[in-house]
Amino acid sequence: MVREQYTTTTPGTSLERPKNEYVYKIGIYGWRKRCLYVFVLLLLIILVVNFSLTIWILKVMWFSPTGMGHLRVTKEGLRLEGESEFLFPLYAKEIHSRVDSSLLLQSTHNVTVNARNSNGEVTGRLNVGPKMVEFHGQQFQINSKDGKPLFTVDENEVVVGTDKLRVTGPEGALFEHSVETPLVKAEAFKQLRLESPTRSLSMDAPRGINIKAQAGNIEALSQMDIKLHSSDGVLLLDAETVRLPKLPEGTRGGSGVSQGLYEICVCPDGKLYLSVAGVGSTCQEYSRVCQ
Image (tube, rainbow, N blue to C red; front, side):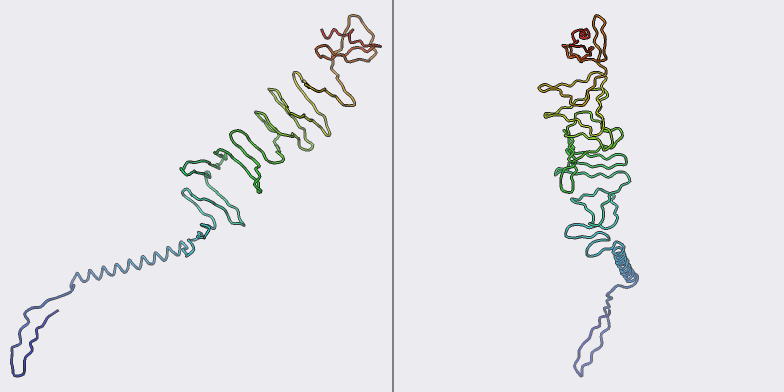
C-alpha cells in the first residue's frame, strides 16, 4: 500500500507538489501467501474427509436416537435383538429373552455364571463345560413354576420335593448311606429288589413296616440268618398254608414206625424240628436234635 501526502492551498498560491518519500507494503506476498492457501485447502479437505467418515460410521453402526444397531436403550434397560458375541465378561443384574423366544447362551469352551457379594468375592458359580456341569455354592435348589422346591442340595442333605422319585436305570439306585422315605415301590409289571451285597440291610419304622405284593411273591434270601424279632408283640403268620420244607427231622434212640405225619417241636433255644406224629406228643422222644 502506498501512502500519499496531500496539501491544501488557497487560490493564488502556488506550492510545489512534494515527492513520495515513504512507501509501506502491508500483507502476505510470495511463497508465504501460497503456503497459507495450501494449508487452508488441506484443512478443508481434512474437514470434508472427517465429516464423510462420521456419516459413514453412523450409517454402518446403525446409530439412531434410541440406540445403536440391534441395541436399543429403553426405560427398563438395554434391549439387544438377534445374536450377539461378547469378547469380554458381561456384568448385568438381569438377563431375559423376549416373551416369544428362548434365551440361548453358547460358547466354544464353557459358559460360566458368577455371583459376587459387595466385596467382589464369588459366592456362587455355575460352570457349563463340554463334559460336565459344575455348581459351587452353599445350596443348590430347583423350584417349580409355582415356587415349590423340587430338588435341594446342600452340605448336609439332599431333599427331593416331588411326589414321586423315579429311577429308570437297569442297575437301579445305589445309596452309600441311609435313605428316608415313606414308600418304596416298583414300576408296574417290574420287580422290586432291595439288596446289600456285602453288608446288612436294615428297615426301621416307629409305627410299622408293611411289605405287600399285589400279584406275586415276596422272597427274602440270605446266606446266613433271617431274623424276625418283635419286642412287645407277636409274630403272626396268617395264610392258608404255612410250609417249612427244610426243617430237620428229630431222632430217638429206638426205631419207630412213621405214618407220614409229623408235628413241629420247639427246642428251648427256639429251634424248630419235626417229630413223627403219634397218639400223643412225640417231641420229647425226638428231642435229640436240641442237644
